[in-house]
Length: 312
Image (tube, rainbow, N blue to C red; front, side):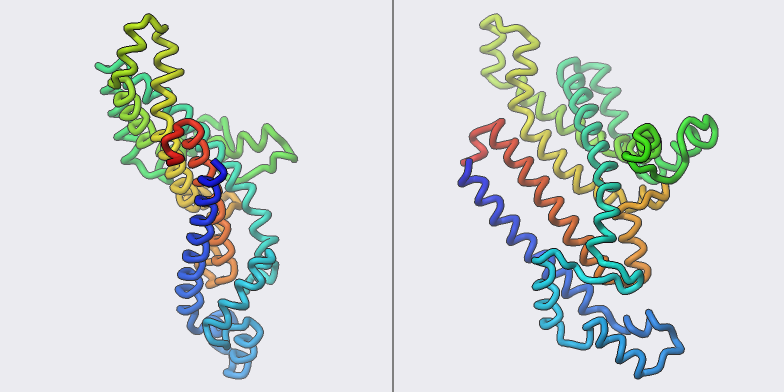
């Protein structure tokens, strides 16, 4: 297991270096007229040149990259060009918001998709067809459209939940839950479609295996065959789907946070992209990559624990 983990960590570090290098080259290499955009059209050439020196974008690209990497490995992601604050400080205030929303959504997707997938695989017939129809409909509807529908129904018409905004958990746990109920529901409704279908397919394959027929012929309880043996063999496929869903939710959170006015990573990413705040964009990219790497390592370890053949 330790050897398997070390390989995954090394490959993840290589991925982190490659993605950050390419992203840096794209965003900083295409950062033309940044100083003029910040200062405005009336800025003089002397003012533009002075700001470029201050921002460090007057140097060759490779020198900028080496300087950025040297600071990034110590936790210094630079200073926002438009807000004047430390990028690390900005992201540390936004990251818990997005993580709380995505974590709640991924747990709900895991539970609901597992339940629907097991029912579809075991029951079959009309239950399977209904679940497949629901999955197809849910997959075809954009999460932001679902979010708007939820706002109209539960916030504007029924007035059960707030339409927008975010409440910190420490300030009010109930307010926090209420503020995340609609955005998390929008993410879950659009996410369970593919996950439930993958669980269904994995469970059907597992239930058709020879060892399942042997266990049933030996008089093992159906519940034990289903949950202790078949479900465990279907878990690697389900866990892999959840890791992909987590990445998709991080991307989808940008739109959902804009719809519900939630101050998370998604909203600050859109704001930084519109204003040309490259240090913040790079900070978001690094944060997202680290999150994806950690989740993938955790999923790989779970898969290796559930199925020892994965370690090979």
